[in-house]
Image 1 (cartoon, rainbow, N blue to C red):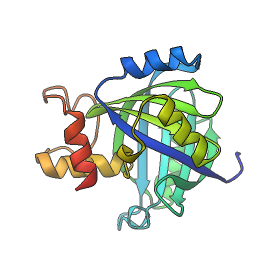
Image 2 (image 1 turned 60 degrees about the horizontal axis):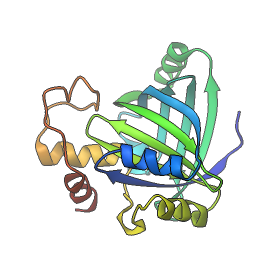
Image 3 (image 1 turned 90 degrees about the vertical axis):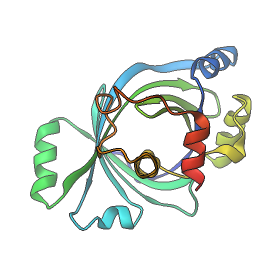
Length: 201
């Protein structure tokens, strides 16, 4: 099991990922992980106490499966994170449900990961938009990576994907509660401006 750590990250909505990928290659970034599809299950108690406390309990399935707990830090860029690898995904889900948790949100995405000297950069494709997530050892390195990628620091998103999706769902009156590609198959793509407006309202 990984030791508890402070996760330092910043997230940006972008119009397209190709220019970011091209810029990463110009910066001699190394592809740390190829583009893979992920399925994320968010758990909470029926009374929603984790979400109310700003906490996350997530089971993520892609090239491997990991159970992650996150709690708020002093600002939106810093969060406490504890993560453990899981060998039996279905058994872990049954265990969590036996402890009183339930799946409250399912979201899918494609993620490609690049490594820069100062930070790790994830190119994320979600059903409702495309994003760049940057993680580093300290906030200065995360900000430097954003500047190197021509991402305006003041336009970073203050919300998690769940938080942003919930605002979008209310704004557009979507009838579904999960951010899966199937749910969005008949919907028009959202613009970056729409994503930013929903994140900052």
